[in-house]
Amino acid sequence: MEKGIKMVTKSYIIGLPASGKTTFLGALGYSLLSNTVEENVYEIDSIDNLDYIKSLANTWSQCKEMDRTKRNSYVNTKLQLKDKDNNKLELYIPDQSGEEFEYIVNNRSMNNTMYNEIAVCDNIFLFVNPSKISNDLFIKDLAPEYRNVSQEKVSALDNSIMHEQTQYVSILQDVYALRKCRTKIKIVISAWDEYETEMSPSELLKNRLPLLWQYLTANCEIYECEYWGISAQGGDLTNQEEKEKLQGMSNAIERIIVVNDNKQVTHDISILLK
Image (cartoon, rainbow, N blue to C red; front, side, top):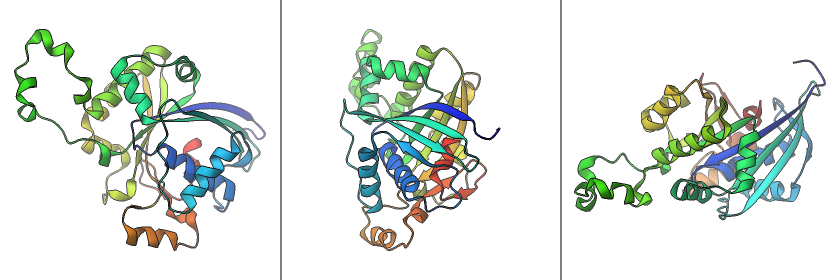
């Protein structure tokens, strides 16, 4: 890239409840505002909704769990960033609840703001937390009232039994239906610290969420995917011993774990924005 180039990149964050979206924004906000990571790809030029980002960053820095984003709550944050060559990047990242995406799946509709933002965005961050995904359900595990239901009543089955992997596929199908073009998607596997594995992020997705992985790989002509593993908190905050260990770290940024699909590890969470 030539020096001094200004880019406008609009991104959209998608994810079901507890997939790590808001925690990511808190860690990103703290990382950019503190500017303590020498190898950071980007630094702050300016931020819209600065108070909101500061509140998320403050909660993150104290090792507190993020408040759940309420449904119908919508904060579209614009980050104006620059790299060491003074290339400018404007990044639009909305924060909204996972329940909003559940609503889309169950009711087959989305509001105009979401529709318009997704239609024009340059890339999508798809957040997945495998530890929050239900175990695979086999036919033999279905309750009798579902196993014996007549074909005429199949379409009337309650959407609440839809597996999370199927919900993600449904959301991705909606994204393609309204954009009608190839879409760059960054698959972010959150809570990476929970997986003691030699697998890459894409390998873990294939192992833990095979339906979603198969859908993405089978439709590579419409989805251009990057795979990342991220632990934005660095550990399990519900474990008091682990929480105290994280709080005792002299440099909070070192809590962050970012792994690319080549298994390279960094503390620079802003690398996802490239």
